[in-house]
Image (cartoon, rainbow, N blue to C red; front, side, top):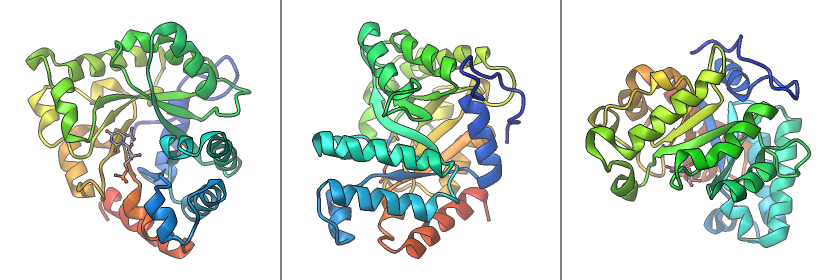
Length: 290
Ligand SMILES: O=C(O)c1cc(=O)[nH]c(=O)n1[C@@H]1O[C@H](COP(=O)(O)O)[C@@H](O)[C@H]1O
């Protein structure tokens, strides 16, 4: 586990996101639970596919796994599909997680030209915004530098970002593997490493998303993840087929930076909080190698 201690504080006085996440991973272990209220899960839980159902689902997950997970990751799309009522629930869930002292990753996968990116950064990373989360997922496919407003605002407010590098879906390779030795993914990894040089010690606040399902791509593309010094969010556990043992094998020396994330595999164990806790605990034990 990288040391948490000495990372810099933000001008807003908050400890950096990387430092806070490092401490949470040291205390709880490397598990993030995705809160993905899919219509089929709402139905299985006996809930309506509406804002009240979303609210009940999300707060139940938070109550059940909040003390086991280093972070929770609400999937924004599943709130957005309910319009303003769904987004109001998301605001409530983010506030409830903060109240419960659980770190949040808003899975919004934002990315746009710089001037528009500044507005996305304002929404997800600025103190006082009702949607502000501890961190947000970003898509770098308009160019890593287009993310600048979010990178800077995150640093200012002690928040963080997770930039897509190698995604868990099979289609990702058609873009991310392009370029051979100088692949698109490698450029993203190197840009994140350079960005983390602004954070002293411990984990930087610029994380990457690398799927648990990417197999040998890290070695094939010569990606140096330890050099990034940032957290690696690894989705693909469970429902997409990867196991904790795969994660360990795939990430090797970078494993101490990895935050494994699972959604449907754990959420399917609801609606009872004990079932959800047991499912999260099983995943966590696998990630810890127990
Ligand atoms: O950024 C993500 O979290 C993400 C990136 C990626 O490469 N693959 C991926 O599955 N995700 C998200 O992680 C979650 C995975 O859900 P499950 O497959 O149900 O565990 C979904 O919310 C995805 O949108």
